[in-house]
Image 1 (cartoon, rainbow, N blue to C red):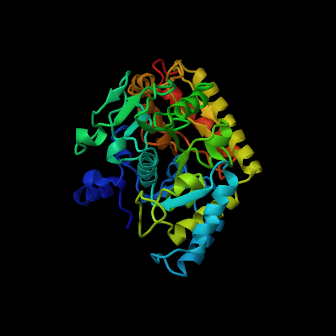
Image 2: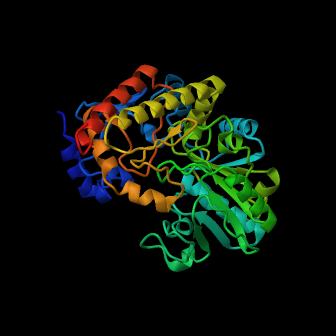
Image 3: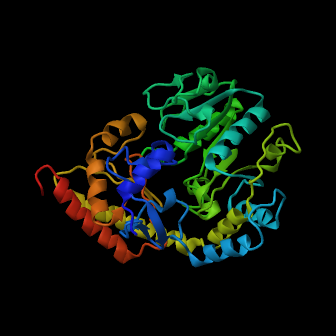
Length: 424
């Protein structure tokens, strides 16, 4: 018996807060009822009603090979046949850590955790333990997980300090968190332990760093004795084999990873020089632990994924993203709608605006103009799944062929005609 998405959503709301286990999935930003995924393969997902969607969500990035890639599934099955968790070290942890160290210049030591939130949370603790300082600087619109310290209010046009961005987070938890505008190098003083940044802001649409921004930020941190943390949960091993630090030739002090290094399974990691990581327990006084950290299934899936990502794969991803970006621009330019399509490597965003935003303050009015909502539903009705919110990006995968990219552009052309004010 096929159960409708609407019925599933009503069932879910009775036993799961809001009916979902992550807020954006509720479709609250775009309206309507979420589709409940039954299965996925390659570039597609199917919902419980049997509808097939060409998927540009790809679990928000980790499915860079496409869904259910045979090599990843084989690695997971092989690992699972030996047990799913031990609470003890495994060789798989060493192999994946060695792979990361080999690929990213500057990294000498890696600690695996279970999510990007855990990675950034512990990276901040490490920075404070190393520097013996308390203040953290983050950028408005950059998302670093839901730990209390990093849920300081974002979005003000000026620096905002000590204001919680969530009920349940007391002001004391964010008292030492300073929020500043993206793409502007803040003043960093001797009380600052770390500056944390998404090198490419991919949680407010897609906002590129201005030329020189990351380099100047690194120099300012060095001058003040603060540590620079790159949150590469999205950009890590997607922009390039060395992530954003290789792409922009900027070496942070601490890296945070997730998504791709788990091959679709829950995972996170933070990494740095051997000297900095020596401050972690059991060799140092900065405590971090987790029974499921370094889970053997996630390690196997991550290793299988990274082994299939070489320069030809990154070149292909960038080529299809270029094709998609140019095609969308051309399709929408034929309508009365204004659009800009920011692109960094194989990451792409959509802003229904003539001007490309540089920070969260400029993003907000664009995200709230309602055009993304209309575009999203028009695409979904025609079988193309985008993220259900205007602050996300598109994730083409290696499973997206040039033919599918062209089909996406053709569908987008039909949608913009439908939602254009003059219907053209």
